[in-house]
Length: 281
Image 1: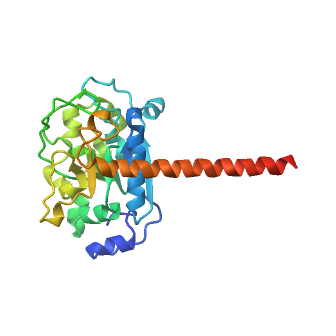
Image 2 (image 1 turned 120 degrees about the vertical axis):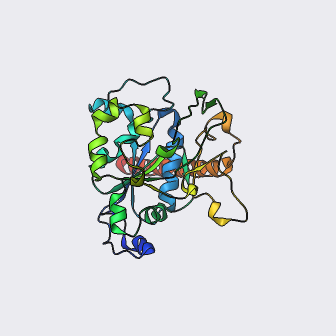
Image 3 (image 1 turned 135 degrees about the vertical axis):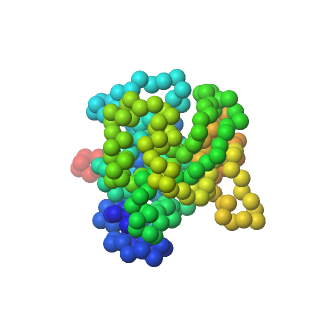
C-alpha cells in the first residue's frame, strides 16, 4: 500500500500485505546553516531509533537555487531557509512512493516505521485518496518572536507543514508541487495545503509532532508521551532556549553525537599515523 516504502514487518502492524522494500525510506529534512547542529542531531535520532533503512537528505536552499529549482526571493516573514523549499519534497522524491518531510528542529524518540505504519488506512481506496498525512495542530503561539529573535507568525493550520508524510505520486501533489509553484505560490496556499480537499489530508496523533512548550504530557495517559519532539519556538542550540522543556533529551543526543565524531576523528588519526609509519620503512 505504501508502494515500495515500508517493509513487510512494519506493514503487518496494519495486517496489510506489502512486499519488502527494495530501497530505504526517504526522509527530507529542512536545512538552515544557522541550525546545522540541530539538523545533525535530528538525523541521528531518526536513524538511531529506526528499524527500517532510512535515506535522510537535507533540503539545502543554495543547492536548489544553483540547480534552477527554486528562485523566489526570501521574504522577511520566512524564519528559515526551508520555509518554502519543504514543499519540493514530492518533486525531490521523483513523484513516487511515500516520503517524509520534517523540520530540522525535531528530536525523534520512537521508530519512524511506527509513524509510517500508522499514517495510512488499511483500506486501499481511502489510502489512495490521501495526498498528505500530518498532525492537525490547533496552535497559536504565545511569544512574539522565536528562535534567535525572528518574528513569530500566526495563520490557520500553523505547524501542519512541519512534519508531513507525502504520497508523492498523488495526482494533486504532482500537479501542484512543482518547482515553479513552490517558487511563486503564496505562503497561505502552500502552508494551508490549499491544493487539497480536506479529506485528502490524513492525520496522525500529536505525539509525532509534539510541540515543546505547547503540547502537554498527561502522566496518567501513555498515549500523550511524545514520539517526536518539535522545538518549534527554539531548541537548546539557541542560548535563549538552553533550559527549555525537554532540553535534557536534546543535549544528551548532541553530546553522544559529539562523542561519536571525536571517536571517529581519533581513529582516523591513528590509522593515518600507522600508514605514515609503514610508508617510512
